[in-house]
Image 1 (spheres, rainbow, N blue to C red):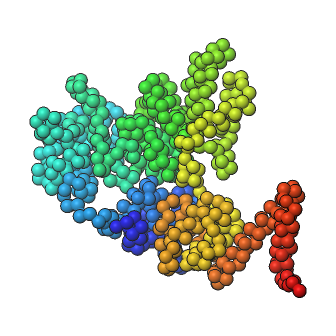
Image 2 (spheres, rainbow, N blue to C red):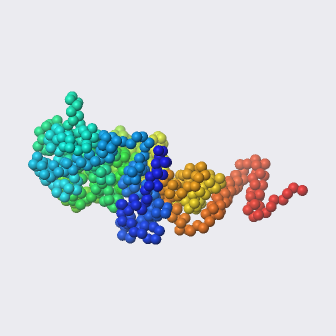
Length: 611
């Protein structure tokens, strides 16, 4: 089954009201449904679901789309993941290959079931086993409440080499299944299975849907095995990738969406302590540095990201290592430095929530933090060599950020201007020279910078931002997609005035290329971009509000307007050429004759015939 076939089969099997009704209460109002929007503080239902068009839109947020874009935004996943989630919901296989045998080590449903089974086992052991006294004492000493133990599904794995393997004998989960979940490993000498998390307190890791996908295990403080790692995380599996997941995002997602900010820490207990203190918009990395895919994941929910790594030297070094990634992603990253080298868990427990909130308020953005670190200990007046190295490093970092465009948020543009002005003062150089050097560095790195339309999917596309000709044209096509065949014979894609209009028009043309009827819902499902889906739904809603009675006649009028605009543009070019005297005498006569004929045609005057 091709991707196009898959999305169409899944679309037809997934009624938008049924799916969205599983996430939020829907209230019927005539032909539509209303709901409280989960992406802003909504007290009066402003999210509308249109079952006839299989679309949704929040008029306050200015976002919308189809069932795929809703799942993408709500779950924080990409299009392919949304397709797979909806396919699983509808019990549809997306591949032509032979179905995976239920219960086999490669069956994801079996792996999910095994992970959930192990989580319950670890929980039960922590709660009731006499062997777990030390584990219970550890959580108590760390200030973890019983409510948090239950909320985070914390557990304990006995200090036995094959405890989990033995427990699985009475279940449908084979040793191979447990191995593919990452729960057990095998001896390199004997090949015998062993429990990967033996003797550790367990922190289950969930995906954004709340499914168990992996585990983190911490050795107990009294353990005398000096070779044992302090923390062990699940290996990469079919379910778990440390570069694609964040600890407790399933619990923090709603709070992050409400505040539009996320706090990123290093440790499991940091997350638990902060959430326990009422700071809910906090997540943790999983044994790796924050990466590009983490940023993309967080930006689905947050506009600002606070990076709060440990206050020791190693934590600060890791902070600096990922600054350039945030700058290159044009993310609003704020660095929070806790005093006295305290980690977030100890800080909030010792000094309270108010002190923590105050620390957030003292945060600085990534570029400012880079400036402080790079110039620390450098005498910019006397040590010219080090000063120049520091300045070049700062400009190189800034050059890797996407080039600012006219539609870039004013706050982002202002921050760059302010930063350059501060560099000029700090290093006592001319600001104009800094801008020239920055432009030069950007040209040198331009090949590695993504084009704007691909770089920032979070940019909200609005109908009001489209050229009026393009907007009217696309509204009619949204109203009746089959008219695209008529339109394409008269209007080329290159006549659209923006990248968004070009992409939408090209989608219409591709969907109608064989002349077969196309429904709006099919057209919507062909688009993977969440922002483009939202734009198309808005255009459709605007067309509906206008109550277009005769779309074909209206389209012909719009096409005539396009042609007239083209002719006017050509006319202005001819006048400019005449005024600048860039033409040969015969060319001037030809241009004048064309202008006269065009004016006669517009006024309905028939050209005189010879003789």
